Amino acid sequence: MRLTRRRLGGLAAAAALAAPHVARARVEGTLVLYTSQLEPDAAGTAQAFERLHPGVKVEWIRGGTGQIMTRLRAEIAAGNPRPDVLLVADSLTFEGLKAEGRLRAVPEAKTGAVPAEHLDKDRTYFGTKLITTGIMHHLRAPFVPRRWEDLLDSRARNQVAMPSPSVSGAAAIHVLATVQQPSLGWAYLERLVANGVQARGGNGPVMQAVAGAERAFGIVIDYLPIREAAKGAPVRFVFPEDGVSAITEPAGILATARNVPAAIAFVEFLLSRPGQELAAAQGFLPVDPAVAPPAGFPDPKTIKVMPFDAARALREQEETLRRFAQLTGA
Image 1 (tube, helix red, strand yellow):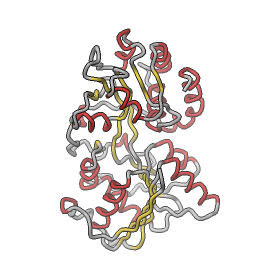
Image 2: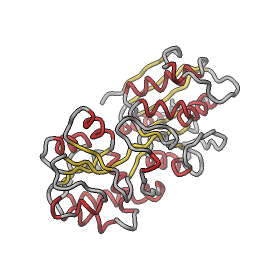
Image 3: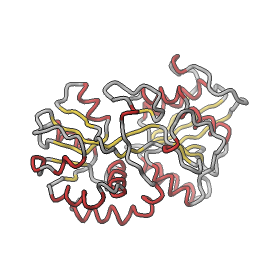
């Protein structure tokens, strides 16, 4: 996946997103954004923000989270980190930067109706959407799973695929979150492995394995099977009753940001009603439960998200993922 760079004018936002944002002093200048959003989503987000703040030009660079962090680390080493705002997949990335003192606390940021559990308690990073990991199944699967425990059923033996945590950041978060749940933990993961779960590549290969009936069940991110089911794929996605793990694609302002007023305005836009409606229009669950989800998703208020201590996960990440790899051989 290549890094992509764009510089956008402020005249191309959708009319539905043209409602004014919070009334504040005018912000202007160049805002540098590093993001792991898909290219069309990055472009749409930048355009929508520029429409609300026509005095700002957004210069954005996108790539996978790993690519973005490699670039940022090189810039830090050279003494010239460029981004004002970082918008990448998972909270562990931000916890690491926070521990290094590289994020700016923004207690004054307006966070709209976003629940507190999706915001860093010190207001150094802010969840902007929900990308959950749950269970998909083929329409001819022997049963419809409702809880994580169901994947331990004898009828699911050697019939469950999942992404490898060494490839998928969402899968790594899922393993770390599972370990933190008293009702699941290592006992559950060990039983899942004993029942023949197969870790393979990223979420795409899991989707293909279940859609092609090679496996009956998959542990996978939500939007892939939901989108493909809408196109006629013989699969369904289940949000387990005992909770899904989630990445929240947080946004954070670097301590070295050059355009702080624009950076704060950008974060506030992402959390505002128009920003959350944009996330839904791009096919993701909004983090604001009052915003309607995309087609095929349930009411967000009905989805239970596993509690997740990101700071603890950062401390335990290396050992947890090493132990899981030993269990699965992946």
